[in-house]
Image (cartoon, rainbow, N blue to C red):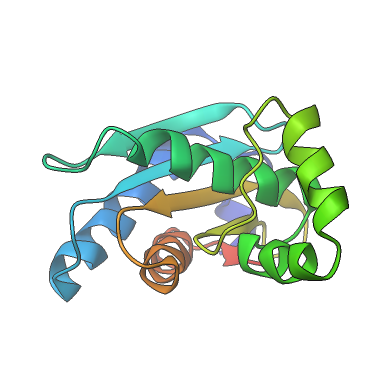
Length: 146
């Protein structure tokens, strides 16, 4: 499978991650979600907001994914680190002009060989639900998460 995967995050892969994440969310009966997929440089590759998701969902999903890819870690881990070093993480948020959200709900997208391709972030459910659907979407696209 790794030979057939692109070496960078394609639009097709990003759309597949989102479609699978949203389908999983609906199967599990979660509230309306937004899912964002960013490339390794933090640029939005694809994003969708389900009908009924509030106006903040897109920005929150992007902020979680942006923090994840920017720091090379899941947003869950970043939230844990922020609890131990709040001044640094407040400074990161200010430096990032508010785009940096270290809250559970985003994970790295990795090629099976370990290279970081980007991050997926979701918003609409609990942090655990957001993270769960991102992981599902990434795995369904044949990629790994971190």
